[in-house]
Amino acid sequence: MESIKIDVESKDKCYFCGRGKKEIQHVINKMEIGIKEAKSSLEKEVDGLDAEFKKKESEIVNEMKGIDLSYKINTIITDGERFKKEIPHYDLWTHKIKSKLGQIPENRNATRNIRRGINLGGAKVEPLFVKSVHDVTIDDAMKSLNSYLGIEKDEKKNLLENQLQELQIIEDSFNQLNLQPLVSMTSKPLGEMTAAWKNYERMAARKGISGVLPASLGHINEPNKFDMKKRIDNVGFVLTVCHFCYDRFQGSTL
Image 1 (tube, rainbow, N blue to C red):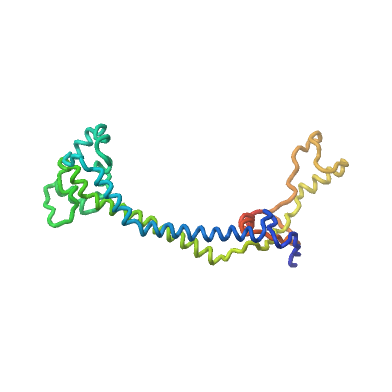
Image 2: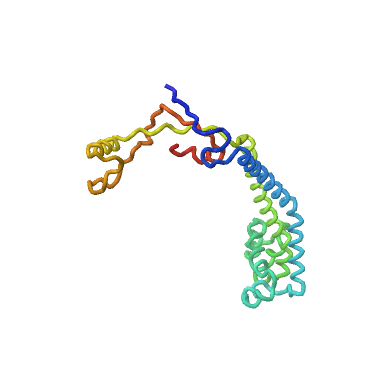
C-alpha cells in the first residue's frame, strides 16, 4: 500500500530555516555570479601572464645593476652569510635557476658530458651548463634567467588553466541542475518502536509511573524508543524546504 502524504508546512518558506523564496533565489543568483566572476578573474590572469613575467624579468635585471656579475657561484655560496646581504635574488643565482633548468635533459646531459670530457656538439644548452661547476658566474646564471622565467610562466599557466577547467565543470553542473529556491521533500517513514521500549513502558505502567523510571528503581538509562533501520511505510510528511536544507537533510533520519 502506498504511504499517505501529509503536508505539514506552507509553500512560501523553508520548513527548516524559515527563509522565503526570494531570499533563497538571491543566494542562488549570488552563487551563479560568483562562478562567473571567478572564471573571468582567472581568464584575465592567464591573458596577463606574458606582461607579468616580462615585468618580473625587467625588475630583476634592474635590481642587479651595480653588482659584480663576475663573482663565481661557488664563491658566493661559500661565503653565503655575506653575499645574501649584498646580492639581490641570491637564491635565484645559487640554486633556483640551475635546479629548474637542470630538469631539462639537454642541460642535464651537458653537465654530465662536460665532466666526462665529451664534446657537446650542436646541442642547445643553457650557458649555465656549458662550464665546469667551479667556473660558473652570476653572469652565466643571468643569461638563463629568461628561460627560467619562461618555465615558471608555463607552470603557472597550466595551473590556472586547470582551475578554469574545474570551474567550467562546476558551471556546467550548476546550469544543468537548474536549482529551485524551494522544493518539496517527503520525510522518511517513522522508525519501528523497539521491543526494549515496549517492555520499558510496561514496567513503568505496572509501577504506576508515567515517563522516565527513577534511578532508585535501577533504571538509569532509557532504551532506544525507535529502531530507525526498520521503517513503517504507512505515512510520509511532505515538507517545503529550500535547496540548501534539502541538500543538508537528504542523508538524515528525517
